[in-house]
Length: 191
Image 1 (cartoon, rainbow, N blue to C red):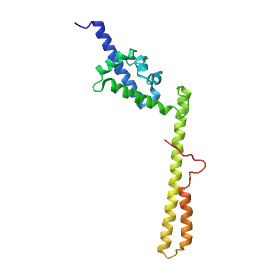
Image 2: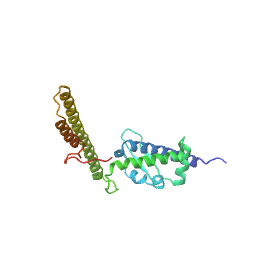
Image 3: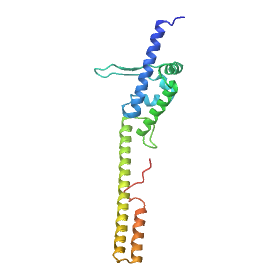
Image 4: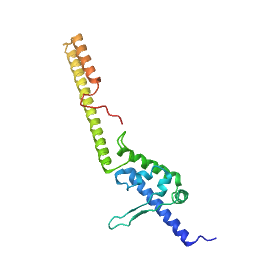
């Protein structure tokens, strides 16, 4: 029995929609801020992603169209158009896209993304990076001081100007400073 023309057209449209959705998900993984509205919520479940629809028009370019479909149709279409991997590959990409959104949400913040959330998440991220850089810089300064003191002790010892008790006291003080917690204006940053 021959497949009716309207079914073939529907299958082609579904295939194009799934491929377009994959492009959007891959773009979202590399740049979560570029994701179309609703994609974050849709990535939370397979069924939501199957029902996701969007139309993006860019001047001078062909519109980007993703049409909704049932989950079964979504899975069958993905298995047909994604080689190798099929729906399993699409689901892996969906999970990666969902994880890419997590960098936009500060730890402990509400999970719904608004434009103010995105800007505050970006600020939080840049503050954490700056704190990390400051911490590393502070540690590098302490380490360099410790190396300088050690070189001076070795130099004095080679010249015979070595007072063991005094050198041990100085070295102990600098080791304590080098191993102390970061300065009060710095915060310990965990990634």
